[in-house]
Every structure is written in C-alpha cells, then in structure tokens.
Image 1 (tube, rainbow, N blue to C red):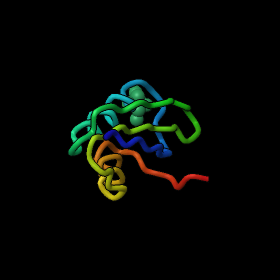
Image 2: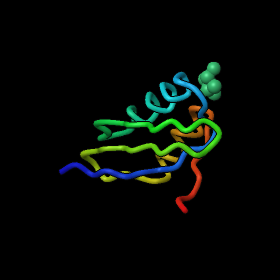
Image 3: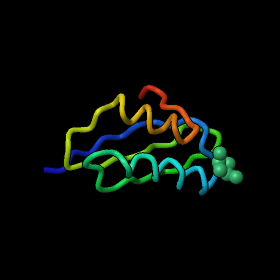
Length: 74
Ligand code: 9UX
C-alpha cells in the first residue's frame, strides 16, 4: 500500500534546491516518489509517496539535511 503525504518546505528557490530535497527524501526507507511544487519566496509543497509508513521526524531531518526547513501546514 502506498502512503502519500504533503509537507510545506521553506527556502527553496531553484531547481537545484528541488534536486537536493528530492535526493534526501528519496533516500528515506520506503519512499517511492517525491514531487515538489516549487514556489520561490513562499513555502513549496512537497509530496512524498512511500510504501512504508512515513515518519514525520525523518522527513523533517531529511529536509534539514538538504539545507531547508519544514513549516507546519496552515
Ligand atoms: Mo539554487 Mo537553492 O542556486 O538553495 S540551490 S537557490
């Protein structure tokens, strides 16, 4: 079964940012697909699809590892 979750990521402004975040998130256990809706100057929506339960703390850490930060949904 595939689980999909959306996150808001602050600070991404170009395609390289998207690649960095995608790379870190794809390395997480079970992650099948990562989709980034880049919105420079605003929080970008990142959609993670996984065939394992998604651990929000792991997502937060991976995004931080790439140099960006997760913002809480609003
Ligand atoms: Mo692009 Mo993103 O030159 O931090 S990598 S702005």
